[in-house]
Image 1 (cartoon, rainbow over the protein chains, first blue to last red):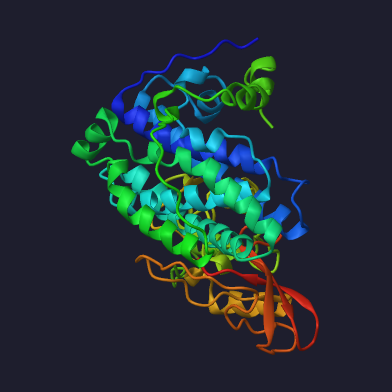
Image 2: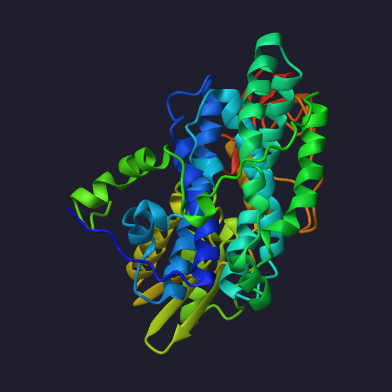
Amino acid sequence: MQASIAIESTPAVQYLLRLGDTCLILGQRIAEWSGHAPILEEDIALSNMALDLIGQARAVLTHAGRIEGLGHDEDQLAFLRDEKDYRNLTLVELPRGDFAFTVLRNAMVATLMKLLWERLRDSADAELAGIAGKAVKEARYHQQHAADWVVRLGDGTEESRRRVERALADLWLYAPEMFESDAVDEAAAAAGLGPRWSELEAPWRAEMRTILGEAALAEPKEAAFRSTGKHGVHSEHMGYILAEMQHLQRSFPGGVW
Amino acid sequence: MTAPAALDTRCAQAWDVLGTVLDPEVPALSVRDLGIVRDVIEHGDALEVVLTPTYSGCPATEVIEHDVLEAIAKAGLGPAYVTLQRAPAWTTDWISADGRQKLSDYGIAPPGPASTDGTVPIRFFGRRVDAIACPRCGSSNTERLSAFGSTACKAMYRCVSCREPFEHFKPI
């Protein structure tokens, strides 16, 4: 079996891994809907968005490997790290839940990613700026699509509303993690690599309020709980998703399509 | 990008060849019609073809690279290699006028102008969204079935007038 790789966790590498891993893990979660979505159109839409996210993750992880300078490529970074070395938001590793949970989480993450990519277009790192220039266009479609569904469900039937309200109560607990800034963010801001994620909080809350308002959903109160996936401390769900993702590369080291 | 005027240079011949390499996902268009060929440069012996990917996760990108190199080798213009250039990001505004007509003839409603790179407000809509003209009967009485189609670059629509479903190449 293929052993794990050790990561050189400089602040720049961590900043890129937060970005790339959030795309990677959400892409994996969304892809679970392939063949299982409630209607064919959504099956196709979710699979397409998963493809966009995996494509973005590939670009960012490839770049993270170059910055790290240890010769790790996108596949090694995606499939051969230990759980503690994944830096995605806890939000994206939660099980896919029902359709309401999935579209509301997509709306929350796509809103964040859209705002983040918009800022990263001005990164001092030309490669990251190039990736952002492409990804921001995709994130806009993701946000639009997810927001449309949140409104349809919130302003829909009694059952759809009950489900999206429950999803909101569950998911909102994981929102504050997005905007907790730390030394990694400070280093990125100082180097011109990218913004502190805390700078995105005000516009994110404003856009989410627009979406929730249109869906006639009340914004939940903020809880004291703070998830910590960005720091490599994950929920109990992370190990299972990694086991599924990593199985092939661990069993057949270096395997390619 | 436009091909150089001189028709006998190796680069100009390569541009002609690229006009025959079809997009595997939308075979109505060549890679030139699609606007993803950014440059063809001669470096001594080797020819460099600069391509811009359409979507981050487009599974056709690798097939296109392969097809481009194969076509250039077949035309005796090799050796060649492909480089991918991310910036500036590809936009549907780069699809040629000829390409738009080919899309429409193929049954795919061509994209309107892409939004600028400024911030885009969130809009909410049901099925009656922008008036996309039906590529079969021309009616604007159409409705969107899904924002995503068989590929990420397309949305699914239905014409209320002629009752036919069709695809729309999304502006991006």
